[in-house]
View 1 (cartoon, rainbow, N blue to C red):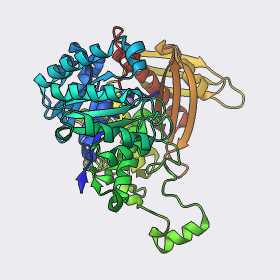
View 2: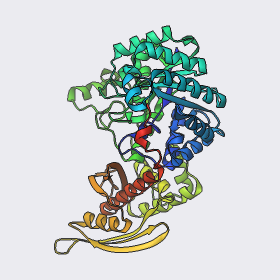
View 3: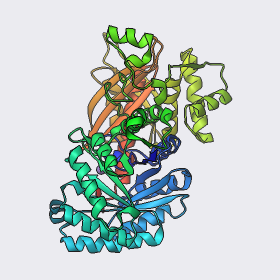
View 4: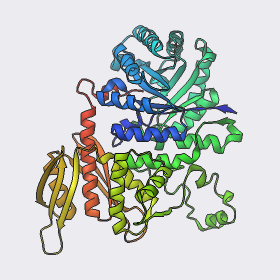
Length: 516
Ligand code: MN
């Protein structure tokens, strides 16, 4: 059984997808979960792209022990130096260098001749190699590059010290057969190809990212780059859960294995959705709400008799559990802390105190606290103490014969601010007032309410989408009162907009450094 290395880029490529930006704290939370999931490599970000990304890469490198942590770097000396600087105290780290290799990208994006691209590669891979042995090299837009040039470029990278050669299908253009042929050719022709690991990074523009990745593996690639829930630029990257479960479920056919603890797949997917506010579609393979639902009567009958009739894998194998009644109003801090740990979260004392306070408040209103309730409390509690805008109080007057009015008390940069305002309805009144108080001019693009668990005392979870000058983000809030949940979701989105604006440095707009 040969091992396939899983390289997770949820925190770098995934984070670049619309609505999926994460704060440094949220990235660290997800990195801990990725380590638990058992990924071989975590691409933590792009250290040179902004001071915010630098700090985030650094803190992840300092904490994560089991997975290798890497930073993406363009083929410029500063990027390599910044990446190494961010990771120099990390336990286990590497640098991921890249440069575009297709005629289109070299000419229009880089404005470099092929010769210059070769020279820059040698220079920067050698520089990276001075800092660490773990140097990966990617040829951006490889699948639309001249194969002869790719062979030359990858050979240069090997001579300069790269130990992993990554073949990105940056624009999601290739097909499984074509990918198989390309990897086969590269493995035959690249200098000392048997001394390095071949890797692929596939995008899903034509819905073939997973199929293309598996074709590359069949041709000899031994590392796959992928993301949780398949998030990533445009249509996203190859989805980690689909790749891993394909390898596991069809092990007799493929004869490969991965280091992934599959029972951590569903918790990872949920944590990512909680953090970003972006849910997966119900029919999403492996982690969608319907992935293990058997609607058709005849199927249900078969599954009840023997689950293998229509189930090729079990929900338990990917970590889906039935909802548990866990805690109530008499549960103490210890019980709460234990359960939170079982759910996969590691909280510090400040965070635990915050969550405990919210837990007590919720337990007073709602008799039974389920895992889903706790997850909502934890993700909210963790971000709250670092947020710029915080909701202190919200009072609403609404009904059949009054103008809906909201009175809001917020903490903004630690200062208490009060304001009242009107709207068409209670939610509109609350959101208008909050928007005025923060002074952030953004547009609400979506608004969805759903119940977290069953029962009329269930917490309502609200997701809102906001757009500020083309920057799109999602916010989430949960509360037994849906107007309060709406205000929390909106404030969460505004905080995320602020964090994102702070993370992007004006000298290096993300679009320009977007990566492979
Ligand atoms: Mn990509």
